[in-house]
Image (cartoon, rainbow, N blue to C red):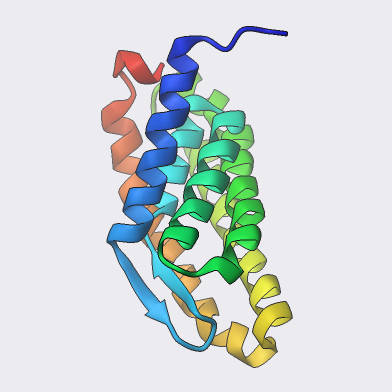
Length: 169
């Protein structure tokens, strides 16, 4: 079995907790789908860009699903585990190397965040359609677009500011 360095364990715990707390702290309920609009994606984007796709997958999926459970939105937890996990994996896969190579937020980094955010919007539209019907899912669609854009506006300057923090490299 391959060892799991203490640094990676610390990063995973830190980012998973940040995703959970930020998701829970800033959210707007959507009664039509029993969901929320939140800015937890900002921490998923940050984790994925700074630490890569595997950590983005874990922190995004587990942190967001845990927030759903703690907020009593149990119906969303399994969907969120997959949707937000894949969001973190997508952003990390497409943007981590580009960010690490330049230390800057370049076009490939922005594209990674946009693609990850669009996946989240699409994923929740599919899940909401399955759970509550097409019309209810449409109610949440614009809010999820705002969620993705707002989270990107938080994450981009944050990753730029944190790029030199030793714990995160």
